[in-house]
Image 1: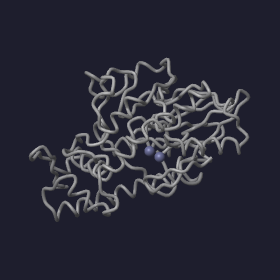
Image 2: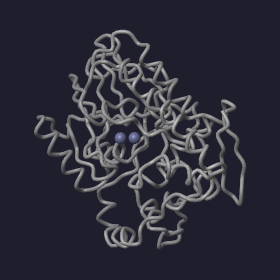
Image 3: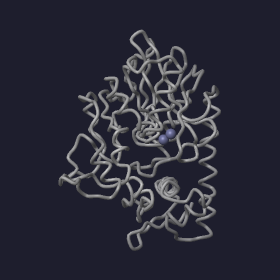
Length: 352
Ligand SMILES: [Zn+2]
Ligand SMILES: [Zn+2]
């Protein structure tokens, strides 16, 4: 089932239904909000799936086009929510955000009570408040947050903020914070659609990316880990060397024998996984080479300056900077780049 999404130029997210005698598991049920929810209801009804049959909601990773509808769907149906053991979003619904800095979820806690929580504090955070009207503290806003390379992520444009404030109540009605009840670790088995699948922890696109693999039928539910026509974004927000971790996760899935069908979250299902993996790896090699050329001409430069040479103007912003940073850190950790800090911003020079 394809649900429309109106950002990142992707146009849609693929929502899959895995059917068994008990009902269905729904994978990645789209964005938060009324529009996406109505599309989900429409697609389910056209597929002949009453809401009451949904017993599980699977979230491949913590991007809003994948988890946005999950909380409400689970609340409406009583479904379990399955995600990676590292699943977390910019807030942490289980914790008190007064004191805590965000850190990786505790991997020892794989089974939590689960369920959903109200999105109200998050809505206040998004529109830039520090407290709810009745005085409760809210988590830090995802907009205008400091980045590891210095500077900040984009602010919410004033007109979007005003619109959100006007429609806060409406937005809240269509979103619940998903709290996974089952957190799969790497290689954990799970039965869905009368088949045995294995959870594959595949960091790189996000730190909490989960693929599911059915080795008997050779089906890989790939989320955004491998996409047929675009290269998944590499997140610079992952500790260490995100590009190396991504390539490692790619090589691993390419090494599985008998993958017949890859079900991506965007674009059409496809077959030749090793070929697609090679293309994506080649893309990153070319990008690293291009980055070295840019660095040669700029000398010491900030992540933002380098990203604006590497990406077309329409892509400029914190996502472009995040991937550029991932590439630069990859080169630095291989001894091919130098880094220094100037007035709170990192600067790089590629030497290799
Ligand atoms: Zn994603
Ligand atoms: Zn996606």
